[in-house]
Length: 193
Image 1: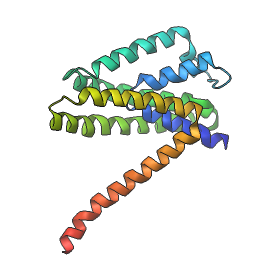
Image 2: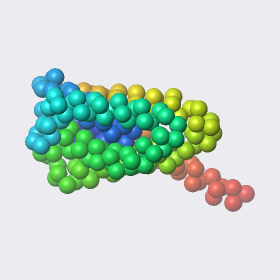
Image 3: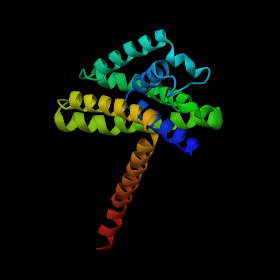
Image 4: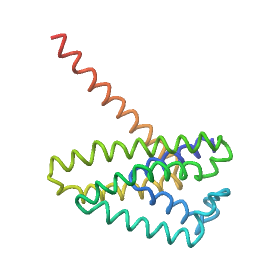
């Protein structure tokens, strides 16, 4: 059961890294530093709990949050984050809740990379351009704030209540599959008529 909870935690952290690269790393590092009984990180990921790394991650969170809310700069930020967010997702996945000891490190890093990269791709290639096109960019700041809030709370949930995060991820995946199935099924129905 512990392995399953660790996997839920890892997937939740890597998914939130797709929205904001540094929030899940800061959450994991802060929890490991201030509440070591709740989360113990193995080497080399224990560096995330170092006070200097926490300060650096805090500065990077602020920079990314500001850059993501400035029109035009947010698109440049998304281009830069195309490399950073999947890498952060890989680190968050591998570091979270000792998953690295139970699963091959290569598999853990690959899973984190794929999850964070997928979330980032949906955000940067579909959601943000649609928001910009439909609102003339006026909704980018509120959407960015919502993404940061979701990234923070999903990171905390992933570490503190992984079963809740896992349940939410399974429901979200089921809804996405259902939506995709309904979307691809409609053209076939239209052609039959």
